[in-house]
Amino acid sequence: MNDGWVGEFSYVRGLVNMVEKYISPDFIMCEVGSYRGVSSEVFAIFCKKLFCVDIWDGVRNRGDNHPLSPEEEFDVMIANYENIVKIKERSSEASKMFENESLDAVYIDGDHSEKSVIEDMTCWVVKVKPGGFVMGHDWRIISEWISHWIDKDLVEVFSDDSWIFRKN
Image (cartoon, rainbow, N blue to C red; front, top):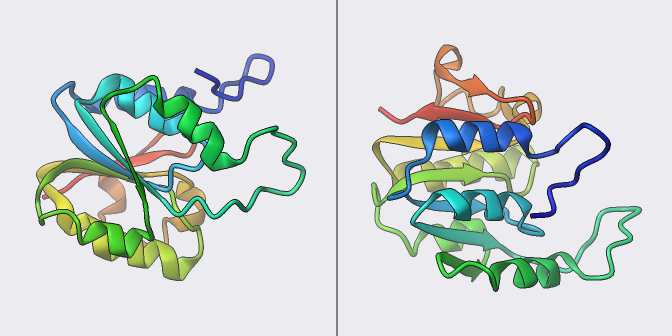
């Protein structure tokens, strides 16, 4: 797994800690915003089935010197995991493929604009079973935008800025 190690720092250490603590081997979950598949691989190791939703539009970050596009890198990673289903679709459209309360967990890490985060939460929180988990990334950026869905006192935030709460 290529987790972006820089010296002693791992970009996914917090995510791994969260997944080890909360995700069960029988979980069926969805990741919204899979990009290169680094976090997808973490989820795939720990859950039964993982749906990965992204538009993979070919746009790269500035200064990105990877030889492969994000989608190509994702496709290389996914070849190692039979439990990953790739869904190349906009988040709101992909959410229509799932029944309400059919997922054990969802991880929101797509477009980080306020409008898109709110749309992702609106579309995906209803897809999680009661008692399941709503998770995501970049808590410091999005926490104010999702206050409608959460009790901030019940959210656990990890070292990589991943966050999780249990759906009532």
